[in-house]
Image (cartoon, rainbow, N blue to C red; front, side, top):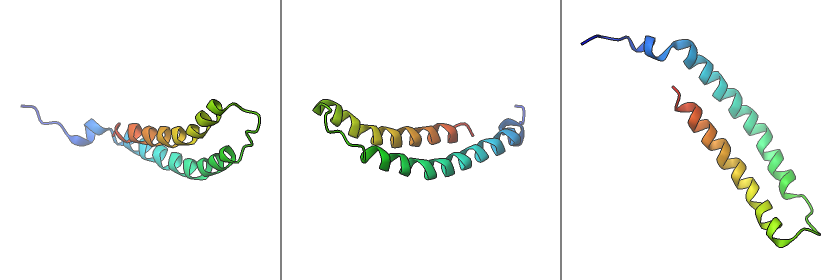
Length: 78
């Protein structure tokens, strides 16, 4: 059985780049998502049909779920 070094398998440069990408992405998400959600929920929807208003309210939840899934996918590459 051939012994392989774990550092060679993980490729340290890729791990560092991934950690930096996750860190920068988390800071960007923390700065931009709350502002986007506030603007999204404060939009006036006076002459819009009810079906569109219901779907419009789901957009905020979809954004948060998409960001969480993105970070889990990025973390899974380690």
